Every structure is written in structure tokens, then in C-alpha cells.
Image (tube, rainbow, N blue to C red; front, side):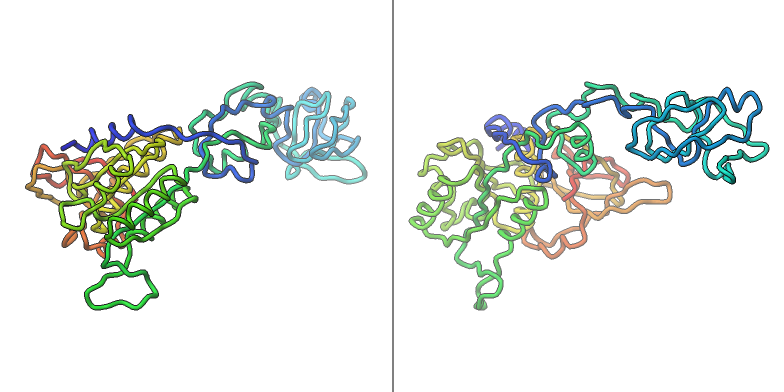
Length: 398
């Protein structure tokens, strides 16, 4: 039985990277960038005016001049005017600095009458004030974004500023979520006393879509070997990734591992030394499809999806790994089994600004209602059985 670290490494080693594709900029949000993005020009590309006002020669101001005839008006986007000595140009924020000007006086510091601008008494100007110098943000050719960046709104602005109408990104994988069990009934359908509502499939699809994996559909299959073989075989033909829920433990109707192996899915591991989610199964299909078979208990399903499926998809997409996050326990926790414990938590902060994890104990791994309001789960190492208040532990947000 693998440790959680060994299982994560085994998945990463076995799972193939997803291909790339080129998409228009308006389709790139949330996608993983597969190319570097370099600055098209210096930024700003010219000496840029930072405030509305007048552009003057500092030497004129320094010699004692305070009244400047208005020579012209220059807006953002206009070609630079040439400033004559002893005069000023009315200037707008974002405009390029006029030729010969080297000082901007804010509009709040001037009065205009009879075609001239007068600077208020006592105002102290400085050379090149309110001028954003060309190339002071970055120079032409500077790498602005690296491959592996998950594109955020600010990154869209950067890509657009680099003059790129489209970019290379990771192709979204085709994912099929399959829940198994005779007892499961979808919402909206009549239900008998001995049956339960199908919740794992919709929850896993929601988690995947929340993380940006939108080509994701759900299928529910009964515990029948022939049906399982037929439908899973069809999904293996169409999908890059299968995520199954249920049928992976030791019960008489837990057919999933044998069905997968009969379809040519090579098992990489079965069982991880953790709670919840110990029976998890992972394998690689005949066409290099990644197949995750998660335990059927709802808490186990969600924890395993978040801890293994989501990071595996990000890695196969070429996404840069994020920094690990840690928190401190808000109360003592005892956990006797020699297993890694994934404990759902609510996050709170104290007066000192420290982020604390308040454990939320579930009655069983089927108690999904207790997850409402939780922010994620903490990871308690299998080497220990008692964790004192204040112990620093890894945090995994949903």
C-alpha cells in the first residue's frame, strides 16, 4: 500500500501530458499558457504624461516664469507636439510628453484665463515630475509570462499589450465522470426507501468545472459487469481521463477494478495509506488515458478528487505548481490509525492575523453534509497520532 506521497508521484510519472492548441485571446482565460510572452515594445513605449495639466520647460519655471501662453492642446493618442520656449501645452493623462517639455504641472495647480495658464503662487515644481519614463516598467523583449502560467484577467491584459491576438495553451482534456451503484437515483427521479440520491457524480463534475476543466460529463452505471464493460469501453474511446466513483473496495459488487483490467487498463496502484479514501485505484488505459477510480463514500470521493485528480490534471496541463499552503490547528486532534488523515476544516483567523484550522469531524466518510461551510482539509502525517493546538499542518483548499 502506497503512502500519499508515493501515490502522487506514481500518478505524475504514469500520466501523459496533454497536447497544446492555439486559441483566440478571448478564449484563453483560465487556460494554461504553453508559450512565453515577451514585450512587444518598451513599456511605457514613450515618456507618458501621468496627470492632466500643462507641459512646460522646467528651465522656464526655474528662471522664475509662472505665466505661460497656451500654445496648443494635446490628447492621449495624439502625435507629440513641439513645445516653444516660454509657452505651455495643455496635456492629458496618457499622452506622450511634447518635444522640448520636461515638466508637468497638474491642472489643480493652475488657473487659465486670456489664453494663458498661470501657476499658483508658492508652487514648487521639479524636473520630470509626473512623467512616466519610457521603458521604466520593462524593456522591449522582456519575458512577461512564462509557460505554465494559468491565465488570469491581468495576464490577458499583458498578452494583449504584447500584441498577441491568440496564444498557445494546453488543450482541455475530455473527462468523463462515472458513478456506479444500483442504489443511486438521480435528483428529480422517484426514489424508494432503500435507495439514495446520486451525489458524487454531480459533485465531482462541479469540482472539475470549478477548476476550469469544462469538457466534463457524468454517466451513472449500475453494478452489472456487462454494462460496466460496454459503457466504460465506450468512454475510453472518447476520453482522455476517466474518474469513477464507487465499486473499488472489497465488496461482492465492487466490479470496477476487474472491469478496468479486462479493458486493458493497467493498474498502477490500488489502496493508499490514508483516511478517508484508502481504497482508491489508479491506472493507465491502452491509449494512455488516465483512469482514477475513487471510493464511493462522498467525503472520500471529494477528498481524493481534490488531492489526486485535480493536481494530476494541472501537472499534465503543464501548469506551474503553486506554493504549498500551511495553517495551524485551532484545537487538539487525536487520530489513532497509522494512516495519513485528511481532516475537513473551517478556516478562522485570530487577532494576531494567524490563519487557524478548525477541524470538522464527520460521522463517517459518507457524511457529506458536514462538508458544508468547510474551506478544505488539513493533512495529518501518518507518523503521529496526536496533534496539539498550534501544530503547523499542510492545508488543501477545496
